[in-house]
Image 1 (spheres, one colour):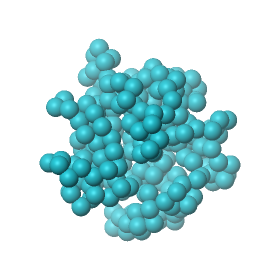
Image 2 (image 1 turned 135 degrees about the vertical axis):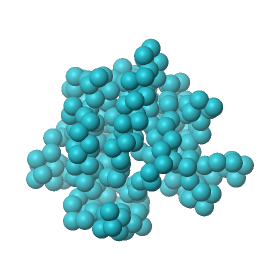
Image 3 (image 1 turned 120 degrees about the vertical axis):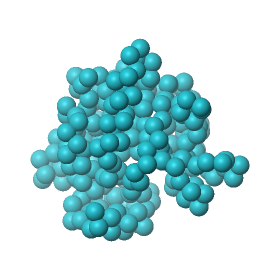
Length: 237
């Protein structure tokens, strides 16, 4: 099974300006994320899809393969979908550029799901991790709910005090190539626009969206506080 990892990277970000170019251990975030994926040795190809000449210049400095969007996109998944036909593969994994600390075993679990899906019924696979109530109350933490078979039923930034368990969505979307093409033909839903979560569109368009629970915490870089924690983590790792 051929697998490509694509990293969408936009320059504008609301909570942390130009976060893709912020340094972690002296290396730009987008470079750190790319290098981490390369080191997994799980992919036939890894590339960055960006909307920014400034990011492109940094990627050139590090000799990182990348594509520059010719269109304006609402989400990272829309951005990588622009280049879906540029890759000869079965699975395209969208790894958010602000996820530099993903673990090899987390991606291996995603690949295992596709390998075991002999009827090709699953469209999308992603990751979630159990969190405590205080973490769940944070609006920058995207929560995911699933059915008894761990298929996604809802994504939200809102805190639901009635929930017994809370799971945080980790910024990875693994698509069958055909499913990514289908996603590219959809438009943003009202709920997606309100919450700014592209996973909502996947659920509301009835994709078979499998979630995998993982147990290794990752640090997503979304705020200045996250960046500070990421640098501490990097130094101690």
